[in-house]
Length: 163
Figure 1: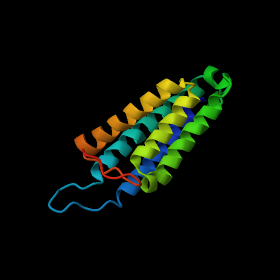
Figure 2: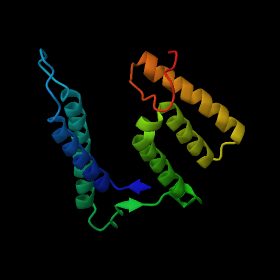
Figure 3: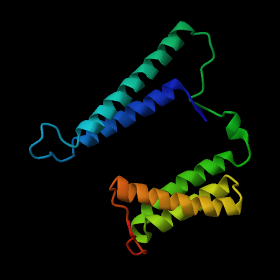
């Protein structure tokens, strides 16, 4: 897919406004001059600056070349014409949504393993490579996020792991 600068700028500006507005709902951190809202506000400002840049460039280009054909807001590119490409995008979005919905109940390890198996198979990775990559990838991700980065991943159905 190819989004025009006008479309992408509009989406980025909307996202920046939503992110910036939502960040004001974050609680203050006692004893700090800044709170949890600072980083999302900085990111929102960056997205907003990128959005304004894209919108201004798009409008200037249209003003400079009024006779040029208008670029479609969304266009299909070469990869989208391949059989199954759009289906793969929707499957990817679907498995991520399913992970978000069910990872707390079933746990990180089984949810991530299922997600990786589906994505590897959509990419037509052979079964032996899929299974080995899923096992190694899931365990490495669990170790890195749970132990090194101290992210509290859900255990769900599985018992606590030694790390």
